[in-house]
Length: 406
Image 1 (spheres, one colour):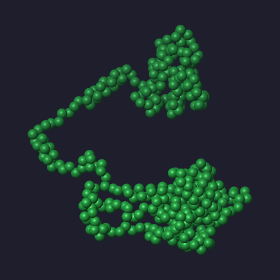
Image 2 (cartoon, helix red, strand yellow):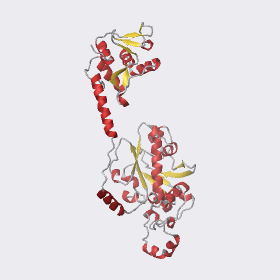
Image 3 (spheres, helix red, strand yellow):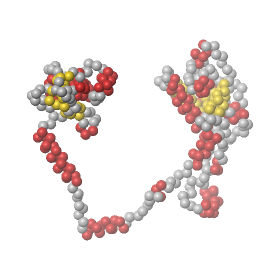
């Protein structure tokens, strides 16, 4: 007959024999929380909280389950996990993890003969293992003294004499990159300020060079430095009044498009997508133009004009166009200033709105447009899509149309 508590519990469970729960007075009780000892026979009596040989999965230091935990698991084997966890909390008994529950029940009921979590160790094996671990620890602690000789010391001194210090702890922390362009871009995005092109310092100057040496060689520096090319869209900055600096966004006129004048305002302002077909069926009349008021993070309110027709556009109107929502058909650009997609998207930012599960269809798949993915049913994800749209458009305007108020 087995002598360890886990093997005894397995034998009793397979044979469908109940274990005796004994309280402090030596009486048999039915509730395990009232018991002090677990009695399998007169020679096999264990404390209720005695550890067993069943190791916990992913536990440190080979921690095992107690006897009362396994007995209570067998008693509640027919209930689901939620009821089992609730009963464990009520009785103050440690619960078995979901990962181990099926393993333990299969082992205790005899469905499997072995389990990797079960460690069966005899007294002799344990003593031999302890002696081995003690010997290993003493070996690890032994220090190896290096062999010192006159020849080895001479070689080390010769190597040290040839060392050259290239960097130090202080010099490695001093960078050579200049981030003034990032500051200028932030000023354009947040404050709407135009930063002159010559405000960016010359990054070719070495760190630590004095200002006097820089001024003495100013003429040679200017003559040797090549002018930095600017984007084609900013070479000729149009002269616009404050009213004409409002950006323009063009949406498709097709009623089947994802965004039209029916639903674009609600999407960009309220961050919620509503099918334009639904709004048409509700009797909503299509406006000639809508104005979206965007509230930025700093509290600034920026207006955007949105249209679906360019029939009355003048040159200054085309200069204000920063974004075009495309439906995927070439006829959308008929009569525009730039009818070819390769020309159009060289001057404005293009977005192709679609369901997140769909692919970009031809010919839009060959155009230089950004995908704007919309979820079919999860409306709480519209907020992230709108934020992604504004971030992409702000980055484009800062580089290509800094004269607009965005």
